[in-house]
Length: 425
Ligand SMILES: *Cc1c(COP(=O)(O)O)cnc(C)c1O
Image 1: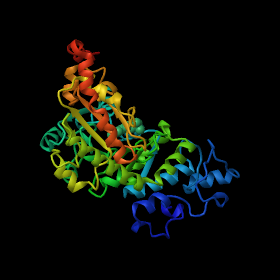
Image 2: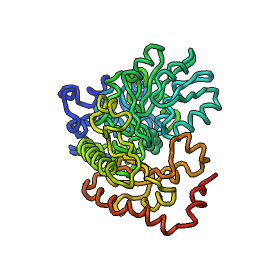
Image 3: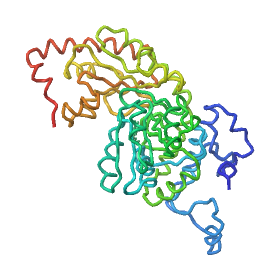
Image 4: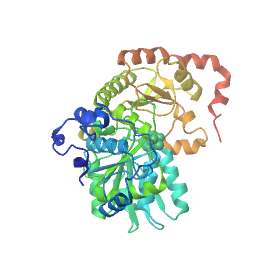
């Protein structure tokens, strides 16, 4: 049975709906249990059958009902319908986290001897999983410089099964030319995956561009409230069927409560994205004009190396702004992070609360300086994930915090030299 029919949506004009209408209504039953307006939370691990014949009918007719919680939950189906509609894809698969979604896809699609190619600016756990874990099973991961399509083409062999990139990348906010990326995959008969977490379906439409799989850490903009972990894969139904089956075996599924929270968070998706985009751009412009700021990585700024590609492919540029401080060592940079009053110090992004971090400390502390340099992580780099607070307040806060870098220089004085070299393994 068609999923839309199953959900009671087949007679609705959902294909023509805008994002907010989809975010509020898509995927949900029109008439819900108990005549409830909002989705109930199906707090059950298993599902009952009236009699033996009902079990046999379920198996023989492949009925679209639930059986056991690891294989599905009604709330999971509703939110998957919503996510597929928001992304413009045929099918969405929900996972317990973004990493579980990535692991679920590559474990289902790759076998010993197969190869995958990454653009090298990527979420470090994605890289770690592919290099360290998949490597143990004989899958080869190759990394090429982000945006170097010739290098990616040159790295393709007859064993290459998947091309992977993020867009925009974290934390440099490089943007992939989706047309070139898709053309490369098609020319060589290799499937493509875009991790569009930092863009969200509001800002980027990889499926429309012909990408085979889109991945989101729904923990970020889709959930949007820093209160849940989830991940989603979107693609064609037939391509995702083996991935869905493996998910039921792996068990990396979301709980009924978690699925409800995600659905709840999604209702305001378009509104939140509009504010994240507005805040990101306003903060990036403010930082770009500030004398203490050396460089701003935000694709909405005209001097960003990927601005032209971003303007072609993106509707807005999101809330994440990375910047470096002029003549600041890691301690002076930390002093600015410590001086802000609104953003909280934490990893992650995409929620209503602004979050700030120094990548050197938060994500790359155990790396050697050479490794950090190879990942493009400067000592003086700050990553600010703008929430949905008022842009004026975020800017005023940064304006009062930035001078902390020079104050820290005065306080630290002689110790600066030693401090610069401190973070090591
Ligand atoms: C956070 C993130 C992930 C991992 O998602 P989790 O939900 O934390 O497992 C993957 N890719 C990107 C770009 C992310 O920001």
